[in-house]
Image (cartoon, rainbow, N blue to C red; front, side):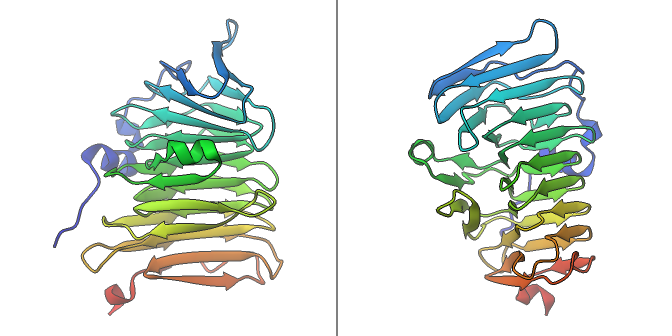
Length: 297
């Protein structure tokens, strides 16, 4: 078979994040350079905080590293809730978020080596994408969000707490996505997905309504072991594989909670097709393991 697997660093991040030395408690992102848009980066002299002041609707920042210590925080001051900051992290190591990230608008953390949100981390944002995929910069500056794997085998792992504002969204995109913490997007959307190309689709009200994916050519895993909550919104899990030579698996042993409204939806894609469930209860049954049809034979 021609399966492709994550790198050793990615496997260690997933299996035992503590094997990576935690960043210093006051650690902040390093080497930030604005490449598009209008923004500035400044450190707080009194506290371990980094402030990004953005005056354009969209901005791109290149970072040498993006680690946040347990006592540190990064604040994004953006014009409004529809403003977006793309943070391109050029590091051979996964980003480690042990502190706080705050933003009124939307932020994207792009690191092909992976992103790990530690147990005591707290993310409070309008919306967030954490991904190992590469953002198409031209389309980003024009207003769309398209992500291409480009050979990355990194993982996104959440052991902390990620919260989007009302009607916001949380998107975790990588060949392996694992949630062991809490993800909340009230009346918004939560996406945990893999694929060669992933496009986030927004409706006329600028709400994330669906995704478009190209099936992955490498083995993929989407796993929820704790809680994903999107009351009044939508949860999308997608681990579609290209062929029988690679596997796409969704492990669901935690809580997927979209509230009691019959119009709220949990969607999942595994194997080669989409399936959707309109929920009339608060939690779907736990211990759900979804496999391609060929793997179940």
